[in-house]
Image (cartoon, rainbow, N blue to C red):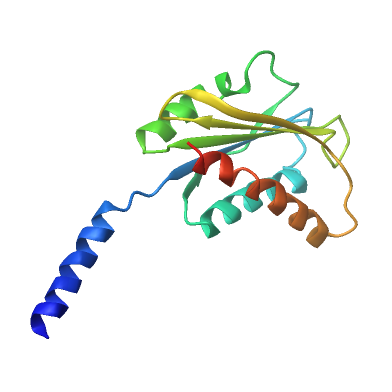
Amino acid sequence: MVKKAAAIFIFGILFVLNIEATMVSFFVVETGVPTEVGRRMHSMQWENTLLDVFFDEGYIVSNAVTLRLDSKPSGEIQKVFEADIREARSTGANFFIIAQLDYSSGSLMPLEITLVLFNADENRKIYESQIAGKTYRTTREEVDELRIIAKGLIPLINAQ
C-alpha cells in the first residue's frame, strides 16, 4: 500500500512539473476619445471580459494600462505597444491580444472594434478581425456577446 501511494505521489509530481501554462497578455486602446473624458465603459467591458474568459479557461492573464490615442494609428497597431509587448515577452507572455476600440468624438459606444492576436514566441500575427460597434439593451447582453467573441479566440491559440 505504501509503495502504491508513493508511486502515485511521484507520478503526480512529475505530471504537474510537465504542465506548461500559456500566458496571454491584453492591450486595450481607445481612439477618438478626448483626453479630458474618463475611460469608456465599453472599453472596460472588453478588457474585463477578455481577462475573465481566458482566466476561466486556465490561461495565465495580464494586461497593460489602457492606452488612448487621438486617432486610429497608421500602420500596424502592435507598433504602438512595442514597449509593453517587450515587457510582456520578458515576463513570459506567449500570446498577446490587442483590442482597439475606435470611437467618434462624443460617442459612448465604439464605431468599430479591431481584435488582433499575436504569437509572441514567433513574433507573428495570427488573426485580425473588425467588429462593428453596436448599442446593447442591457449590460448582460453586452457581456454575453463579448464572451462569445472572446471564446472564439481560444481555438486560435490552441491551434498554435
